[in-house]
Length: 269
Image (cartoon, rainbow, N blue to C red; front, side, top):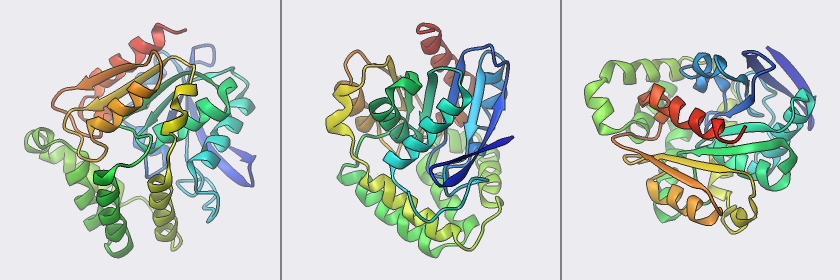
């Protein structure tokens, strides 16, 4: 557990594994807390030096009311990589984390060794815009337990929900009980506005790092066409579609997810 004072905030992060192993930066999705990687950290730490930060405004980082853009968050994370002085890192971004990773690769290329985007997006189409307009209203009005119960409908595949209702409920309880401060609802709305404004599509062709794009075929949150769009835009990128899987691939297909990412990283050490 450590903090870095950078870009006007205190950025909280945790490290796992052997510092002599290849370094991996795990970037969380919309919630922003590194706790979202809890099902993968130990697995990655067996082979990698793993860094898991909380985004500005979330978790144990400063709950700043400003700076909520994917460009700024990429700068925050680039500052962290440079502070750690382990060289460019294998950046793995889930959903919103993938959008942040895009700007790390574009604006801070010296910090990125490889780029993996999981269930992510380069901009919002009409479907995603409508979806997050609804989710913004939910975030503004609903209590946390009801909110995450609703989110689960977007995030898990129908197959996983049918076969593992207990695990879905565990996820809801875990997400809903995380401490919430009075300003968190305001920050949550700013973060939804942030991803709705994100648009890096026209610049993706500039990315030169080896790139992997991963998506579940039953992702109702950021559907497969958004990942296909990213893969088409980045020269030489690889696209892996995980069958019978929703948005939270790292939760639904834990070992398969690790193997997909580690195989890719292993080819670019």
